[in-house]
Amino acid sequence: MSTGAGPDASAAGPDVVTLTLNPTVDLCWEVDRLEYTGKNRARVRSVAAGGGGINVARHIARFGARATAVHTAGGEVGLRLTRLLDEEGMHHVAVGIAEDTREALVLFETVSRRSCHVVPPGPQLREGEGERCLEALERFLGGRPYVVASGSLPGGLPDDYYATVARLVREAGARLVLDTSGPALRAGLAEGVFLFRCNRTEAESLTGRPVDSFDDARALNGHLLATGAAEIAVTTLGALGAVCSTGNGHTELHAPPLPGEPLSDAGAGDSMVAALTAELAGGADPVGACTLGVATAAAAMLTPSTESFDVRVARSLRGQVRAVSRG
Image (cartoon, rainbow, N blue to C red):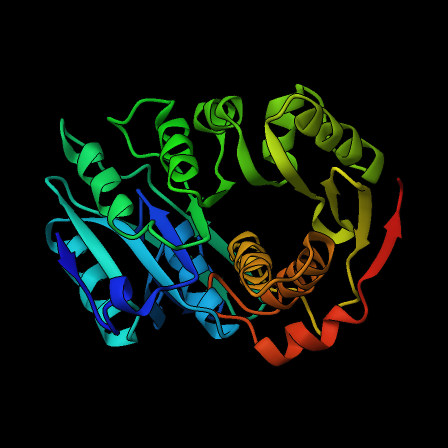
């Protein structure tokens, strides 16, 4: 286990700790026009450490809050991931694993202004590696009000791993923000979390039917709150916006008009989670925090791949998010 750049988080007391069990090194290449025969000459646009919790930690810092990213790192790619985070100046804790960390590729076509995000499943964690991740997370829980567990589970971990994380966080007196998918999502919700965010695809996996409207999202959120799966439920609806639901009712948050051409939604979810968590850590109410989250997700769509959004644009769009209370 190694601790990366930045001040000692155990001494400084970060507002948020993030957990990324299946991180990536994100490679973004651009081509003028993608040809399906012959050779495509590409330019390297960016290389960055990525994965749900790492992206969230990066964006939380851009909103002025403090964050520590706990993540796995394995093989040569894991070394590169760690080096990239050190060079970025992010405070992070790397938990060594035997197999290689994955790489993901974004192809951006400049003529069409469209991008394609290709992501492999990632490594298979071996016996004891999941426990070491929990130990690393536990080191940073004392006095830290929020933990964000974001991203997919790598192979080798049980489906109820995030449920174990939820219990650990609760016992430490912290609040868990969960953003994942599949069986790991259902197991985490069965344990109960503070805040849960899902997109339409994840929402459909929970309901077994499409979730395309504010009414659909409100019904799902209401069910999650009624069953104790979450204290706050946020379901996003793409270009429509999101529904934020608490014990005080449901609020439709209508997405603002974009000031430019949308290029990619690849980083929108992580950007939203970062904004709303940073706001909550600063004492904002859930609806206000989610309002900035919706504005930030819109700002993220103006950048290709998972590149960072413009914070000034996100803040400017906040006032254009229309909130409708539904009781």
